[in-house]
Length: 349
Image (cartoon, helix red, strand yellow):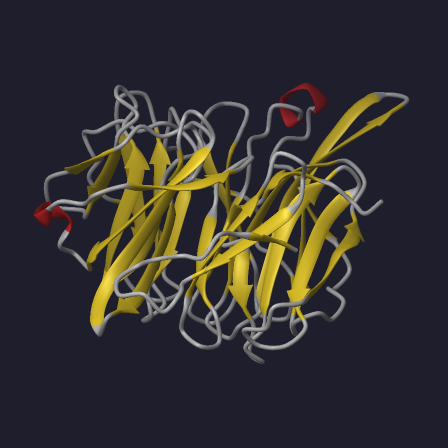
């Protein structure tokens, strides 16, 4: 009997490597589970392969512009003196190859009681390929730890942005600027770099609340990100570009991340969206990039999942939907040859 996933990872957990092969990651009982295509855009996969990490409670995945995949998790280990909580990270440089050793990023709190209340990490990768890890601390403030050139790390920095809840979303633009959104009480906090590798500045708060953990974003024009989340009051999906009005897109989402992908469909630049509905079914739509105001139409896929789905393009440019099913298995659905966005039924990997 193979390893069973507990739930999907957070973030960009289906990635395409420099060799064109897709890799998927999920949280298992004993660490990270990994599946890898045996050839680019092929139908066979290896895995699930266990990457052991004792005490891992959450897993987030991000891929930098160089193609390297960074795994960041929250670890809680019980010992004789109680529970010890820290954040850990590892990097995969090539598809299917071993990761680096897991490295502890520590905890911004020295006191064990406060350390145990540390939130769920969100990683981002800067212009130079350095990892930035954002997390809510025990006091409800957003903090970051940034990697240095050479693999060492800066000390924790407290943005003094509170109250913050779990579920920070991060976007890195092609120019290397990192922008983050953090859910708060009835509002959304927005911080960004105004120059690559620069410090973070707190921009104007967004006067819309969202369900913590549902936000995701992507660059939809040079230097401009669009964010998508579930409205805190209605559960409906919302699109938002800083400095504009929020655009309601309908639907009714569970408290899982929205999946977002920018991909060409029938020769048009489009944004593909997917979310897990309250009954566990995945809903799918697409629209012209930055044309959400023209309306979207959600289609039920017939696929059910645990945790949020994710989207990527394979080596042939086809849209690929990945999900973890109710039995803890990875399932993959690919775009078929029909016009528009039509997926074949998912296949268990």
